[in-house]
Amino acid sequence: MHCDALSSEGVLQVTKERLVRGGCLVQGFAAFVEEGGYARFCTLADAFYAMCRREGYRPVRRASDCRGTAVNALLTVEGDALEGELSRVDALYARGVRMMGFVWNTPASAGFPNFPDYAGLCAGRVSPCLRERERGLTAFGADVLARMGELGMIADVSHGSDALFAQVAAAGRPFVASHSNAAAVCGWARNLTDEQVVRLADCGGVTGLNFCADFLGGGRGAREQLAAIAAHARHILKVGGEDVLAVGSDFDGAPPNACVPDPSCLPRLFETFSHLFGERVAEKIAYKNFMRVLADVCG
Image (cartoon, rainbow, N blue to C red):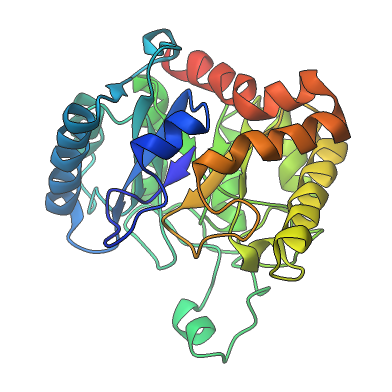
């Protein structure tokens, strides 16, 4: 559901060869806008379509566009691409965006992030478990959410505060946390509480397992990280049911995980999931749950 290959430099985790080896049906490519606003989004959107032409990816805008004979590519947005201009939601939609987050790790025009003091977190002055509970969507962000619902865009609450999550859930439509784990297993504020997992499931949404070791917890070796991924998956399934879990990864947005360093390693992970949860549930995690949300929201 999420990778940062569009904005990453150097050796990438997400490549066509690795996506094909991993049996990828759909890869979400985020236009990550840390700064630069709408102009930065346009640059990254141009790069997305150039990449699709170069690599032979199939750009998709709805579930029915997806073909099993190709790597299907979904353009998404992370960060503040709107800069307070509501008309830009329609502009992003016209460029093919079908999933969008409201914020990254710092406040944006649409809302507030998980971390109340990201600068303090980076400096080591603030615990990574400290959650932003009070500030959520701005008034502009509420208008953005409403317009996304009218157009058929998936709202993504990863990086959003607890209050932002609650406001999106209150709309009652399927939404996603594209790359977020379980706070009950690892207490980082980037992870979802049990209450949030339940509300997400009640809305018909999904959360995507994030392979960032900081958000998983445990030792950094391959075996320890496999155990951590399995623990998050097991807990989310227990709390929210078998329809709420998917794969986010955060490839190219976090250091490579020793267990799942790139997309080519995903079949091995799903073999573990098949052993732990059964093949039917493993297939839901692998693609069926997210494809359901894509169809429900985008057609």
